[in-house]
Length: 363
Ligand SMILES: Nc1ncnc2c1ncn2[C@@H]1O[C@H](COP(=O)(O)OP(=O)(O)OP(=O)(O)O)[C@@H](O)[C@H]1O
Ligand SMILES: [Mg+2]
Picture 1 (cartoon, rainbow, N blue to C red):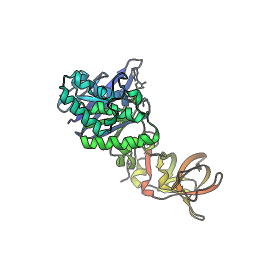
Picture 2: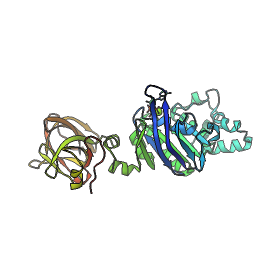
Picture 3: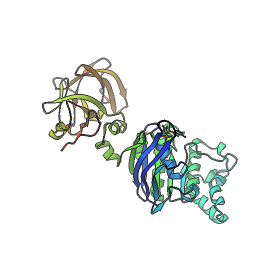
């Protein structure tokens, strides 16, 4: 059991100027929490994880596990187990041997090792494969062996770096549910890295969003979705992505051709002549004949069964801007058709400062 805290921790790679791969990261992960680190490629997720594991130096700041400053503690003394994307299984060892290896090095007794391996194999449904070599396993089974190797060590923190990226889509969904429930049962503090925001939202108790080495926001999935602190988080979290457009303000709201979006006075007071309006596809709808709305020319319809995502262009000032609207999957419009787009729930509209990208106050 452990609480992890990054205290203004930075990692600089040499260069001119140096690359701040992780920049003054301030983040506390509670005991037993499942925290997901998410962000685009190169945002510093793996570096942040490796700093905690001791595989990467901390150039500024510190990292604590409970009351202990581990900044300069060697990896093997940190009581952490890491699961890598590549799994890094020993090919010449059986599943049981792979799982026992770290315990043997620690000098655990044979009977204690056998008991822990049996228990982990049971949890992960690996019992029938204990005598096989990794090459005789499927991708999903190998992934579970990599998990098993971490579990048998009974560490105080699990670190996982994109552990599902080698699995096909269906197996990923199954496995992410299994990992989440396993973490829940074991109650071990876990930091999980992914670039997949859906994985992040479905697995994490909280999700920390990184961009260019800088923490943008760390919050529950719901709060990230409903109250993103800036336009980057707004656009990164949610699929299909939020429509984010620079629009003119005036007269109590923002204005697109044919569509006025009323905005609270506090929002307007802190924006300039323009602001970045954010509307999720599900907060928009296709309006019926005669209703007010913005005219959109349909360019692409993604039919998903129950829903259809309708992509098209809307004129905003002099520009043609692309929008995505969620529509009823049973009656999708046709390509080239002109439809009317209206806002279903004005209270779900987001507004960000046009220059800084920061969320504008609403009250
Ligand atoms: N050994 C290194 N030397 C120099 N720069 C590095 C080194 N390792 C990583 N970087 C840089 O640090 C930044 C963060 O890299 P990191 O691997 O942490 O990103 P990531 O978020 O894990 O990306 P991905 O999703 O692609 O795995 C990147 O700009 C990367 O190019
Ligand atoms: Mg990475």
